[in-house]
Length: 195
Image (cartoon, rainbow, N blue to C red; front, top):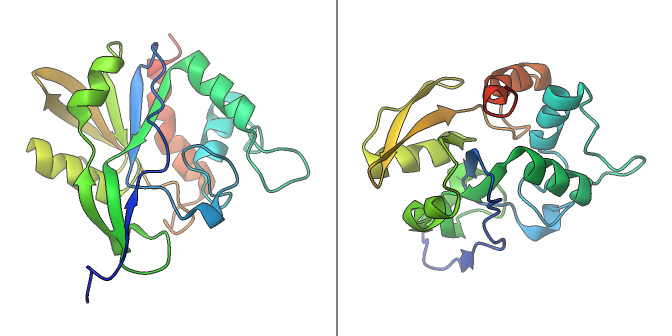
C-alpha cells in the first residue's frame, strides 16, 4: 500500500489542559471533520465518550446531548471538563489516513505527541488514560512500560514522574461492548474527582 500518496493531516485541535486537570485522556487522532458534531475531542455523535460521562456523573446518557438534535452540547462539556479537571489530547499530532475513514487501524502516525511539553502544563495530573488500542500501543512503546489490560492500570514514568496509566475500552461504537459496560469500566476513574 502506497502511504506517501495520502496527505499528512496535522491535529485540528489544541490540547485541552485545564490548570486543575487531574487526569489526561489520550486517544489516537480525531475523525475527519465531516463527522464532527462539536469542535472538541470525541466529536463524532456516534462516539460514546460523552454518553459514558453522562451516565457516570449524571445517571443520564443524554446529559451532554442538545435536546432534539444529533449534536453534543459544547458549552456543557467544556464546563464539565473545567469543573472536574479533565484534560484531553491525542497520542498523534500528525497522521496519514490510509483509508477514507476514522478507523485507528488505518492511521499511520507521522508525528507522535510530545507529552514532555503537555504534562508540565497540568502539574496536578496524576493519571493518564488511553481510550483505545493504538493510543495504548504508542505509550507502551515510547515509555517501555507494561501494557495494561482493558479496564486495568499500571504505572508509567514520564520525565521522572510516575503516573497511573489506565487503558479504557474504546468509546467508539465499533468497539463491541455495550454502553453500560463501557461506563462501568470508566467509572473507576471517578475516584480522581469525587473524594
